[in-house]
Amino acid sequence: MEKVFIYTVAIILMLLVVVAFSFGLGALVMVLWNWLIPAIFGLGTITFWQGWGLLVLAGLLFRSRMGDSVNKSWENTKANLEEELRKAQINEEPDK
Image (cartoon, rainbow, N blue to C red):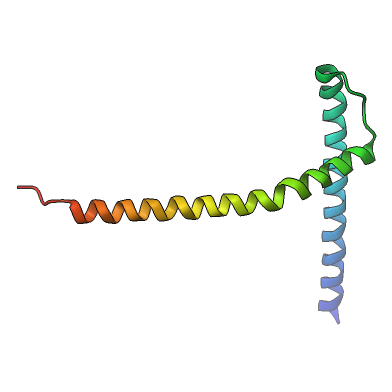
């Protein structure tokens, strides 16, 4: 019974931390937008919820595809390097 209580409290605390982190990032986006964008581009300021929405939108647009392309790129680079290493080892002649 004690383990169930501990796990329940741990899950609730983790959820609270995730929600707080999400709201903190939304506030950070809002502050940075309101500080930089009006001065640089002459656009208006945004509210907290608009900043949070921008954060969610950016996550949807960039995070999922970026991870896939980075992984594929790394796999291609790794395969090319391994192939070049094999060729170099085959072509290597011992010192005379």
